[in-house]
Image (cartoon, rainbow, N blue to C red; front, side, top):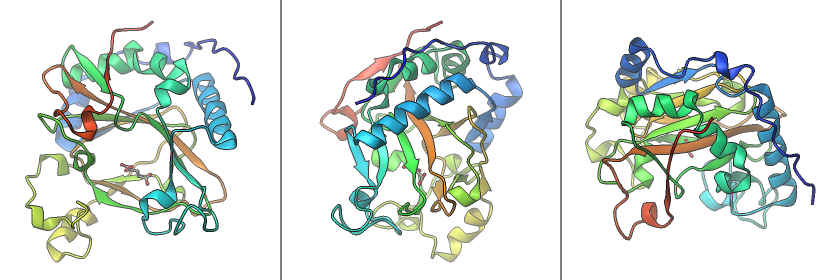
Length: 273
Ligand SMILES: O=C(O)CCC(=O)C(=O)O
């Protein structure tokens, strides 16, 4: 197995990034349910995270979620089928290298999360905390959903960060989001049995047509609310797409006992460097 080089933090670029959102950016986040910050991670961060990802994929270092586990459209039918070992997520990213903790506790990230969630920011290890991979041949299509559908918290107010480790654009399955959808109180009937927002319902069409493709460059971070409807298509290019994804909530929120959200501990974030 390869050893990964010790990380030498490179702050040359991201120190130029402000440590907080402007008032206008905060207003836009709450209006739209998402906001991108460009170049929040440095090229050195991105290169090192890609090395960690390559190693995890090459050595199949668990815990791993395979495309075949989820049966989304386009996924291999089973782990034994052609492409059955196509990885969807390298889980527990925070345990794979300290660099991920370093990144989320930097003032440029933690400061922004505090503006959205309050002074105490908590990162549940049970959700996201992964490197998502979208591989050309066997990637799948993720239908419209709110992340809160998977989770059980006292309040549905969590914020995700999605860090691009390469270019993300429509052909390789970048995220698509529906602005303002986190503010809508949807009737349950607008979702299917698996809590996907139904693309076949006429009443859902206006919202789906208002979708925005979130194009990202390496090092860009998308902040989005756990109720923001989002989806992604397959990767139709010849290159894999990698993104490091984490979720956070404030100190006034907590996972409900005996649920998957409480199955692992959480990290209370304190400022790093
Ligand atoms: O990249 C994708 O397919 C979307 C992933 C996603 O939204 C999720 O797993 O919650």
